Length: 189
Image (cartoon, rainbow, N blue to C red; front, side, top):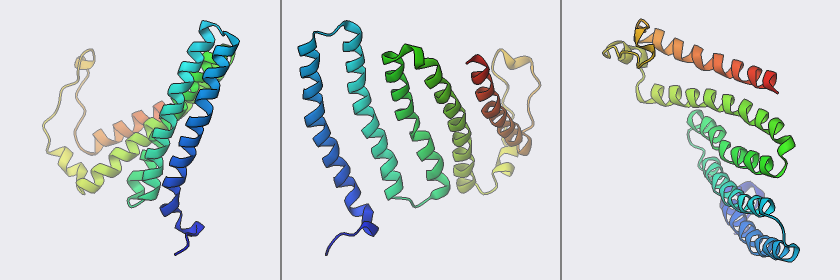
C-alpha cells in the first residue's frame, strides 16, 4: 500500500531519523577536519564543542515534540507540553549563539527570557488541566486540605485560604510574572 502525505504519522519518524543520521555522518567529520586544518583557537573549539551538544539536544527535544504530535490524544495536556519542550532548543541555541556572538547575546537572551515567561504560563495551564482531569472538584478538594504554612522568609505573612482563593492567587501570580518579566527584560535591554 503506497504511503501518502495524509499518512504522515507513518513516515515522519523514519524520515527524521535518516536525515539526522545523514547530517551527523556528513557534517561532524567535515567540521572536525576544518578545525584541524585551520589551527583554530580555544574560543572556536569551545564554540564547536557547544555546537556538538546543540546538535545532540535539538534532535532529542524535537523527537519528544514529534512524539506528542504523532500521538496527539489529549490536546488540552499536550499543547502546553509541546510549548514547554521548545525550551530545550531555545536555551541551547541561545547559549551557542551567545558564545559565538557575544555582542548579540543580550538580544537573544531577551527573546529567551520572554519565551521563558510564556513557558511558565503554559506550565500553570498544564497543571490546571491535569489536576482538573484527575480531580473534577479540585476547588473542593483543596478546601478540605490542611492549611500549609509559608516557608521562610515569608513565614510572617498570613496564610492563604485554601480552595478557590489559592487557585486564583496562583493564577494571578503567574499571569503577573508573564507580563512583568518581558517588560523588565525589555527595560534591561
